[in-house]
Structure formats: C-alpha cells, structure tokens
Length: 577
Ligand code: NOJ
Ligand code: CA
Image 1 (cartoon, rainbow, N blue to C red):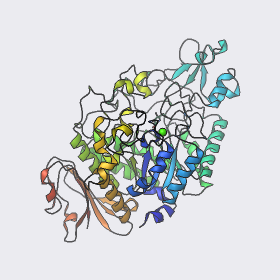
Image 2: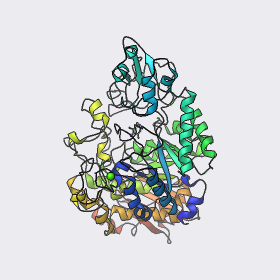
Image 3: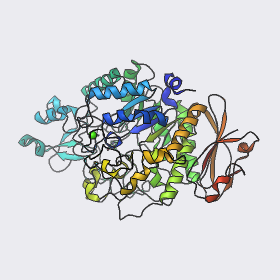
Image 4: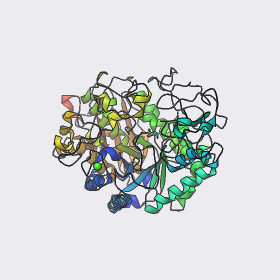
C-alpha cells in the first residue's frame, strides 16, 4: 500500500509513523548555530526517504526561549530565528506534496511572560479583567498555597518585581513551570475563545493537527488546595518515583474539567474534517486514565508514556503493552508507541544502563556512563518491536541515527531551566536536544550548519561525525538504513493498521502475531534475555521468512539467527508466516 493512499485515509494518524522535529536542533540553514525552517526545507528529501507518514514540530513560535520555545510570546507567528510564516507555508506545502502530514505543538497551559496578554495583565490593576486571563492571587504572608514548580522552587512568583507597582505587593501569579511561563486561567471563557481562534488560524494554514502540551494540566482544582506531594517537586520520597521527582499528580493535574476543553477543540477540528487530529501530552498514571483523553469526542491519540518509563524487563514491558492495548481498545482509539522525545534521556542511552537505573534527572560527565553498545542494540530492538504492532509510532529526530544522549555536556552549556531552578542539582534535558550530525565535517557542526558557522547552540560531542547521516548512508548495517527498511516494511505490510494477538511464549521473549491490513501474518518477536532462545512455533513453518532483523546484535553468532529457529539476545525479528 503506498504512502499516498494511507494519507488519504481520513484517520491516517491511527497507524502513522510520526517524526518529531525539534526545530532548534534539526538543521541550521544560515550558520547561526540554531536550527530553522529553511533547514527543514533542505531536508525534505531526507524525510521522504526515511519513510515517515507525518512530522510533529515542537514549538517554533516567537519566544524568549526560557524553555526552548515552550514559552510562547506569539501563537500566530514564527520565531524570527527559525524563519517566517512564508517559510512555514513552504515547508508545509513540500511535506504535503510528498504525502507527509504535519502537526504542530500547541502550548495552552501557559504563555511566555513576554506574551502581550500577560504584559497587558501586568499593566492593568489587580481585579481588572485583563488580569483574569492568568492565575493571579492575593496573599499577604506567604505564597497562596504550597504548589511547587515542575522545574523546582515554588509555582508562585511575586507580581511586584515585574510591575514595580505598590498595589501588587501582596499579589502572586501561578506558573507550574518556569517563572517565565505564567499559567492561563481556563475558567475564563476568553481563554477558550483565544485558543479556538488559534486553532483555526493554523488549521486554515493547512496543518493536520496539534500535539497538546501539558494536556492534563490546564484546569486547576478551583479551591487551590495544598498539594499533598509537598512544595518541592524535585525532592519527593513517595514509592511511585525513584528519581526523587514528584509524579504528575496533584490539584493542578488531570482535573475532570480538562476533558470539556478537548470536546470543544474536537468540534473546532471537525469543522475542517475528521482527518485533523489532536494528540495529548498527558502524563497520567495509568493507561486507563490516558484513555479518557481519547474518547470518541475528545482527542485522537495520547502519548503512551508507560512504555517510555519502562525498563528492559520482559514481564514489565509485556504488562504495559497489554494494558495499553486493552485501554485503547476500550475507547476505540489507536495505541501510540513512543520511546524518546525532547524531555527524556534518549532511549539508546537509557537502555544502556542496568535495569532499575533512573535517568530522569539527566546525565552529567561525572555520573555513571551507559554501555553504549548494549543501549543501541536494545534501542533498535525496542523500536522495531513497537513499530511492528498496530497503532502509531512516534520517532524523535536523531533516533534513526541511533544517537545516544550527550552525557558529557559541559555544565556551563546547559540551558534547561531545571538546572538553575534546582540549584544546579537536576541536570535536565539538554542531553537529548543536541543538534543532529549530518556529515563528518566538524567546521560545520557536523553538517548541522553550513561551513564556517557559529558553534551549535548546544555543543555536539567530538565523535558525532561517525554517527552522521553522511557516514550512515553508505553502511547497509547502519541504524539509519535499518530505520528506513523497518518503516518501509511496516508500510508495505500495513502493520500499523493491523490486528494483533499475543503468542504464549518463553518469559524472556515478547511475541505477537500481527495481521496486516492485506491479510499477511507476521510474528513480531524480541528476546530480552541474555541467551539465545527458541522462536515461537508459529514462526517456524516451512514458508516462514524473516522480513526484518535488527542490526547491532550483542552475540557474534547472530548470523545464524532465523535459520536455526533461535533468536539472539537483544534481537527483534519480524517473521512473515
Ligand atoms: C512539556 C514539554 O514537552 C516540555 O518540554 C516543556 O518544558 C513543558 N511541557 C512545559 O511546556
Ligand atoms: Ca539558523
């Protein structure tokens, strides 16, 4: 089945391979060391050849970049560092011409403190309707409650230092992230109206959908009660967290009212057709809670973070995958599979640590370092396993190169606000945001920029040239060529749109039989153990043919795999039966 046909299908997102572009780090066209939209235009062939169905752009709006664009100063324009609306239109047209859909990031929980609405709110007096767009509260002796910011410190900041007005002395504003990211007041109908017109602006331009930032956070418990996890979200001792960070629970998360917002948004999208989609970034605790966001009249998809948080452990993985499948089926939504994004340590690194190691706080040069070979083997294997299952798969730019986390970034280069707000304890997320290597030429930031450019906005490790696209193109066993093959076989067999059933098997292996839309049957199997294991009997018939094998196998005997009925440790196979 061709990609064009898939994208004509009105619910294309149900099975799509969606590639996240982090604009600042993808490709720099003008040599300032910062990625931009003209850089994306230069890589359209690359995106097409990779075989993805859609692109998700992390925020590209004007922003003071206190949280790399998740602090939006204007929702209806492009950050001049990244280009302009005209360039965006060109990117969109080029993608569409290749049959690739495009979704963009909407950030509705908060704006930047540079947004005109917040500036107007500050310029107004307490009690003025302009202030009611955000969460201002008066309290003379302390913060209005004990809420802590997700990036450390209090979630409340004083208003007076920003306005210099005596009338603001006892006033605070809420920001569940950085102080530069004031939270909108979603009890105000004007906020609803503002975002409805935002959606229409971009839908009119032709975008195919939206990734909704902090989708579980917009509505707060109106009584603003104290948060039981305590005031410091980076020091938490509850059993649910081994990173020391509080989970996303509390009076500002997953309140029932958020669902009304997405029903309202769904009806806006429906004005444009059922092929426009919404995907929730909702860090909720269970696949069942996540499924609430994708009921028929709400969003189309929610990121499946239970898999992101899972270790290389067969019983645990089997459990979260099964639960995800059951919870999605209960509301008729497709599962999503995701292993990396711009907030998590890259999975080629995460999986290179012993089971149980927690990397949520980021990694620095003095921390224990991962086993890169094991990490890469497992990463490719985990990706291939999930890509073989029905549902849609999200890929984070650079993972197709097997890029590891930059684990030795100089601390003085770090930009994530968490680093500073945590008193330089929690290193944060810069390690997964380092610009991509496109060639082996250091003078151009490994081809991220043109020759003789400014240094990349985050420094690339010295040895990244060998991981570059240029170096991987000619190596048939490279991660890049593996991803291309995986996505092409996935599309040809229609695996994302198929049906699956688990095969009872060895506790060390995960195995499902997937029936593609064209009726072909594929056994998707991964060995999470440390020894060769027999393949499930269903994969051993006379006509069985291996259509995908992960590269980078830990064992040297790997070449025997598939011919002697065994699967190597750390390997994933797709076997057509
Ligand atoms: C989630 C985004 O993925 C993350 O990068 C950002 O810092 C927060 N939301 C705040 O917008
Ligand atoms: Ca640039």
